[in-house]
Length: 121
Image (cartoon, rainbow, N blue to C red; front, side, top):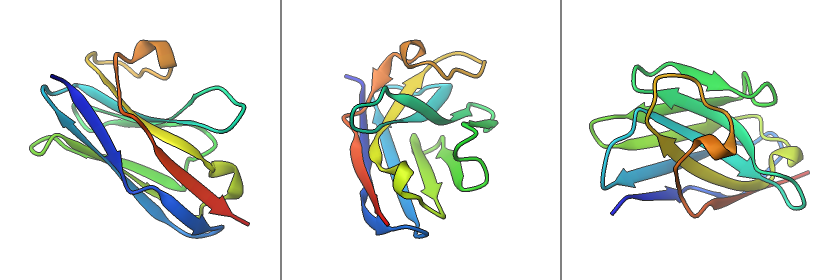
């Protein structure tokens, strides 16, 4: 059974940092990504990392967030620095196979349950 489990969310002040982790089990994936969904908004792409560790970021987080993966442990992380109140959302881990950049919600086949990130001003 495939599972993606996120951890590391919490409450932080603006300008602070958080590190999210995603542990995958049941299979490995060539592409893993983070999405987020703020209250009343659609789920949006944040960042992805491929099998060759190439990364892709949404413009809104470039220079502040860093995605990485440990293929041996089948895990993925998102280091979030210089957090802003507008980063407040539920963050989801997602995964699929494929060798391209995928940014659409419908392009990912596996999802975690999400972890809440709240940034206070």
